[in-house]
Picture 1 (tube, rainbow, N blue to C red):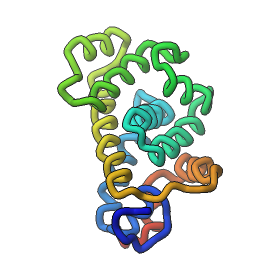
Picture 2: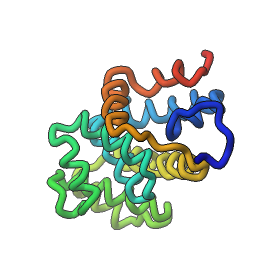
Picture 3: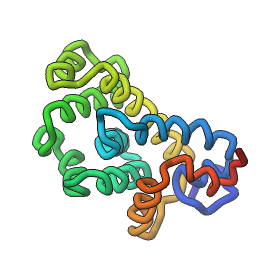
Length: 186
């Protein structure tokens, strides 16, 4: 049960967006840029970073949502997401992605845990400065989102198909499409 009285039964961050729709736009715009903008990292890879950080933070809602979004956009699907969650070092990922996820994991613990050695390893594996930047920002943003969702004890969907259905919508329409659902007026 949420710590505050929300004006919606919607789970996770969706209920929070409906409670404070004026915060929904900037947060969704940030996620749209970080996870969906055309870039050298695929959308699935960027969603995997969000899911990985959410798993490390033990945020069930955010992990489940972004794991589904990543799986829908990665050829290896949910099997890869679960392998990364279980053991990053053994997951069948390119070295660059492993190095970037190591950076994301460091950010999850503390921004100061991102060492010159981690950055050098990412560069050596082929990561660009922009990819390193975006990885750090995705990880930092998802630490905030995870704490927002869990800090207010938002509801979790009871229907296991919820996340897969949302994944189809996010892949097709993006995060800004959520604004209409939260009552935000442009």
